[in-house]
Length: 120
Length: 120
DNA sequence: CCGTCACTTCGCCATGTATAGAATCATTAG
DNA sequence: CTAATGATTCTATACATGGCGAAGTGACGG
Image (cartoon, rainbow over all chains, first blue to last red; front, side, top):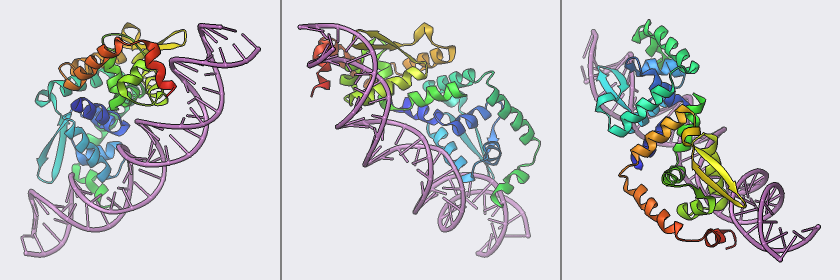
């Protein structure tokens, strides 16, 4: 029951849901997720920590950058099924497509430029 | 995105999750759900309304009694997949089994007796 | 080392939500 | 009709949660 609730609570927020769906195609750095969601770094960091705690997302450190990706094969069966459900449910969602296009645009920029959000 | 969020928010509360899982085997009257959850009638009623709004549950009126059941075939594909995920995820959950046993006990009692919760 | 940088954690505030009780609604029994 | 009953809606309140900014952490460049 606890794992299920951690997952449903993690998925029960629009920002976290968008972040998770944003990871469908590729792993993303926190500063890229900040740009996608338009929220403060501390807020996005907390959201990603909650998704990771629920077992839906994994974190990879590369120098000073922290990359997040879907848990995939390393996830528990329950978490993996949840990811499958939500990604399938979001197919054809216009809001998710808008975000996907936005990510393509974000990918054309340098991480250096994106992480300027910390200095503004 | 909106339907997904309605579903994940509806599933993101322990009482609502227990209520939904309680409907796996059979439909239940509100007073039976009140007995199961041990909450005030108004609270349980609101929880069930939220589950119904998310398309996870259907309501059937029989005289003064209101019965709730899983949406099943009448549910949208997204909601149906969510129900499948959560019921599969709860298989073998001890907490869910405890509730299931509790429901068996509740089923041995009359609705009249259970609905005494309104008069106490 | 020492500063910078990407990120996280902490402290706080505003909003949202779960809960109970009172009032109300709808249905049935008399 | 009226009263009783099961459920819902309304109102109020306590707690949880999302949000930000400031301070702290760990890695890299000098």
